[in-house]
Amino acid sequence: DTGVSQDPRHKITKRGQNVTFRCDPISEHNRLYWYRQTLGQGPEFLTYFQNEAQLEKSRLLSDRFSAERPKGSFSTLEIQRTEQGDSAMYLCASTRQGTTYEQYFGPGTRLTVT
Amino acid sequence: RKEVEQDPGPFNVPEGATVAFNCTYSNSASQSFFWYRQDCRKEPKLLMSVYSSGNEDGRFTAQLNRASQYISLLIRDSKLSDSATYLCVVTVDSSYKLIFGSGTRLLVRP
Image (cartoon, rainbow over all chains, first blue to last red):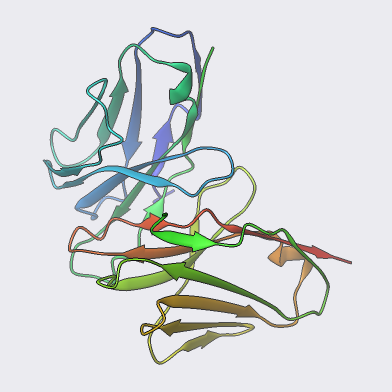
């Protein structure tokens, strides 16, 4: 399968715990985006990378959130000290700069904070 | 005010019907425009890009009105498989980050 993959698909955690999600983009895609989607809403932009550089972070991304893309390939999104309000679907998307900029989404990681 | 606004619906239509969705965007500097489709508990998938000249893909027609800052999607001859949430999306800068509306839910009944 050459699409975007995300792991885990589901995560249930207790409030206050740390969680980390992984995204593997399509191999030749140099841009990688993270979005968050809550029930009844469209996805909201969190951050994006061009290669290994994190070029923009949304104001939604509090200091409890950190994202990395160390070698310009896969990316991780970590949430520290989770809160119930962090419960959402976390979506990763990738694209190749200079093409049509169509973003291909992974299946998402559904986080439930209890 | 949200950057992209859509009627949440649901639009409940019989098979074979024609249905139209509109959305409005607030940033006049918006650069690119799209309709994405999202099935229940699945990821969004690009349905079509939207151009000022309008574009058609089979039963789907999209229009962009930059002066009024609205985007439309017309679905002709609705199929049961068209049941989904349709997300209106814009980009505003060179990041190409997607700015989504909340989506319009379509239910096509037999």
